[in-house]
Amino acid sequence: MGTLPFDEMGLKTGKATFEGGHLKVEDFEVMPSLGTSVMVASACITCEALNLEPPYLVTAGDIGDGKRSKELYQYVAANMAMLDITVLAMHYIMPDIPGMRDILNSLRETREGMTLIADAGAMYAAKAAGLAQEIDILTPDAGEMAYLADPKATHPAYVEHLLFRLDASEVVTLIKKAYETGNTPRILLVKGPVDYVVEDGEVVETINEPSIPAMEAIGGTGDSLTGILSALIYGGYEKVDACIKAAGINRIAGKLAQPDPATSILKILDKIPDALKEVRLCA
Image (cartoon, rainbow, N blue to C red):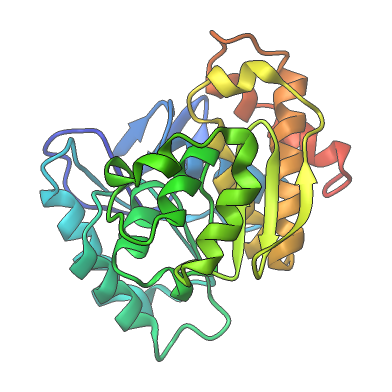
């Protein structure tokens, strides 16, 4: 679930495919560059490599006025039971507290066995609504940890000044502070030069190899990680294990692409099947 930056694009739903560098759903196709499109493309690629059904995408065009985002919240809240899903990955969408509450309320009776992942705008909405504990996994970057750690902030733009000034190297401090607020899920996958997998407030794994500094300058690399993670959980991997594996796979795909800061995210996406083979998750 997530929006795409296309004005007046109405609601699109259906199985997503990624072929020839284009993500397709219904009669719409786009070349992924970042955000929802990259998350879904990476999930498509991972599912295909693992012989899984492709992801089902619910999307709409929103360039900032929030109208289509509201329609997306409403559609998902009204149709969750009929979609028969095991993993819901929520991504770029205008933060809307009532909309997020509606989705989570719709799941309370049917979410047994379902995993909820929130990134980007969906993560902001869950935290602002005081409902982050109802999500299974949040996937913030180091900067977004300051937002999660600030109990008063309803959006990253309003983070307490002291927290905003913290360096990314102090991410463990932010993790501890975020859990102290009581508004975090059980699991965090914190993305950055070092990836941190956190369970119940404790860092259980750090992933920093292979280290590909150029990936930090390439838009979409965090989005691809979220897509790989959602596909691995759909494939049956336990949540914490899936976080650890996804972080490594994303880094290996970057290594195989041999990127520089101008490299397209598509080149990294193309290497996901080879990365899965390198860690022996597929033949």
